[in-house]
Length: 214
Image (cartoon, rainbow, N blue to C red; front, side, top):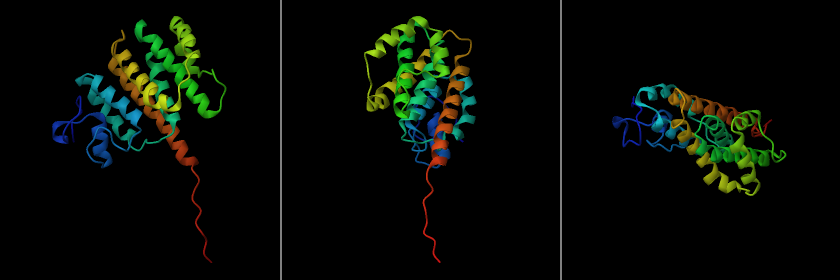
């Protein structure tokens, strides 16, 4: 079994990052971008893998099987991933990163509202709690966000990936007792979010009708 370590690896004998191990267990071609996992969720897993200490990285192995099969092209998945990351990092990140993270929270909430036909400007309870902890950044973010309307394409290609990266860097550099534990929790909770959303989609999919022959 390959051992988790930082970065990309040419083959299993040289070790594996989180997503390379997922590709191995899924029976796919060796890759850190396997088809078995949503691209943004895979990006978060790679970032957590590479920014966790060698001592703590072994604890991530138990999460690898749970990420296999979580693939979807539903933009709501991207929005939930971005929102989980931004709301987790916002309360602990340094002041200079709080504005960008607060903007990410508002962008993800706005995208979810648009996709679900809900009123613009709504906030989930988790987002509200995170924003209340950084009132100055929240006020600035609301002013900035009123002047910007992101497209769905722009959200998927730029805003959501930026939120994930900002969140991981913000946690790594935060003054918290155990950033490795927070990164692990973030990945675990994001996997759970994706699992709930994607499995719900699968269960709601219509069952194809087959002709009944007499």
